[in-house]
Length: 188
Image (spheres, helix red, strand yellow):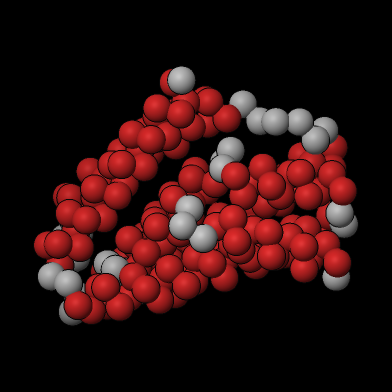
């Protein structure tokens, strides 16, 4: 329980204002909240499981430069995808099911890449070197999902008040900025 509480608190606070929280806000302004939350939870659980394992086994830093370059390129792709937009008819239930699955996959992929080498991942690695492994994994995962859940709520509010065109270009700009920042970090 101690490891859970420490990990939850540290990761929740570390995630506030982080790029992945802003990404959750951008996703939520365009898509339904539940698929985004599912994608975030899947990606976070996998990344933090890896982080805990790494912290338990080796406790060393990851090659974050190469990971940042790959993540940056992926974010540029997400920016282009956002500008291109969806061509799905909302009245078609079969296509709506594909949209939900696509949003889960897109959110999981984006968050997985964003978290590789991120401060929350590195914090989880560090915590796992000192605290209980299961508690660290569960606490860090839940802390991140809780912080990103707040961003989803904020994104839903923005989505209800802004024009779709504004949301589309705002989200694309956010992905573009994150992509450039990650590429810069990786190429430094």
